[in-house]
Image 1 (tube, each protein chain N blue to C red):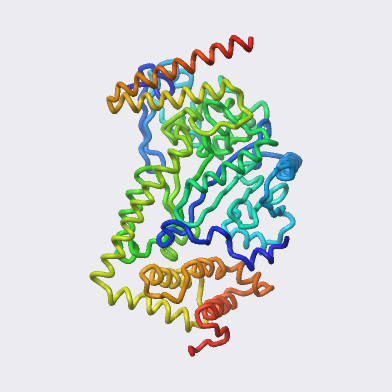
Image 2 (cartoon, rainbow over the protein chains, first blue to last red):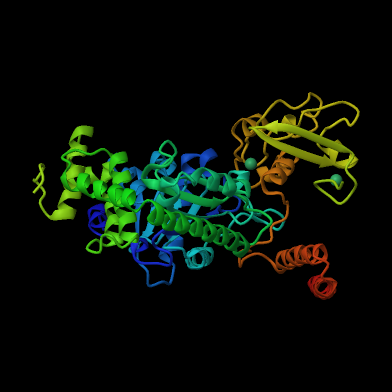
Length: 356
Length: 168
Ligand SMILES: [Zn+2]
Ligand SMILES: [Zn+2]
């Protein structure tokens, strides 16, 4: 299976799910390490290669119907590694690593295992919408399968031992990706983020560090991994996310009650620019698509499906555009391709740069 | 106030702002000594929290300088905040215990256990989880529930002892 196949499909985690308006997806990540083995960041090339081989063996002896695609990072071109990063299948850190580092991913992209990132194994399970329990079930099932072959580093006191003490214990990070345009437009997002941060959860922009609010997308995750059970951690996160969703829904209601014209204008302008612009950079596209996504949630754009927008959010990223074009593109060329892709989606006319 | 690492009364109380966050550490005399803290002279918490400063001279040669399994030096661990191998947890426990407690407000795992772990580990973890439930029940003054949990803990303990006797 090549990476080209990946490009044509959309991940199973972009299907429909609970609370899918404000919530994009739920993710559970487990960090695991092999016992008696140096952690990847401190290990020799030989040790890293041995770990890769052990994980390959674990997958090969697994009795499961799910097929896992696999790539070693050193077999992939820079662009291909960026593509996997843009699809949330690998971290930026793994993309940088070479010897012994690699990825296993289920065909629906709902489950993935990074090998030799900061830890020997970083296993992730994604679900559409707000569904942390299902994401946890998926992660634990795969964890159990791997553990039939692999012996993990574990202490009865500190739990799963990880390269960084901030992950020790369950080794679990659970996170929810949220689309919060209502709270952003009413300028109530800051106090909500502050409140969430104060109770021990981490909030960050979905599109990397430097782009805090691009597309009004945020990720909320747990920070504490020791002293609580996995279920306690996800139910706490779940409860807080539901509260945030409630605030988001109220903000949208208030916007529609008191500023209906402004909301219509915001969404209409987003549509207008997306449908007619000839050049568009990533951040502008994210912000405008966020407006469109809000329009869909509010029932103003019955002809567009939400998951198509979510798919577009993935496909307008630089590596995706370049992979689709089959060549490297300058930033300006990317801005042109990006605008074209969006126009093609909205009205089916790829070369119509000046409107209908 | 109890020691962060055991149930004894804390005699050393440290507070300092680390990365804009106020951290507090409370230690009993024994654990303070174990951390190389002379309770009669002032010390900064940054000396204890990993990676944030040089430890006092004197502690240095009591603690092994590097991990016997992977060779990571104590200095390297302090600089990076990352461990070299699972054994590093034992090697650098002096710094780690305090840092882990500060990060997670806990020092006992109660979550998932690998199926390959032995029965003793499962029992230990089960008791730890019950203990947590017990504390919660007592905190909300649900003494009926607390008594129930206490019974279950002693049941599990008895089972564990029988098991241990059987193994010997
Ligand atoms: Zn103590
Ligand atoms: Zn070590």
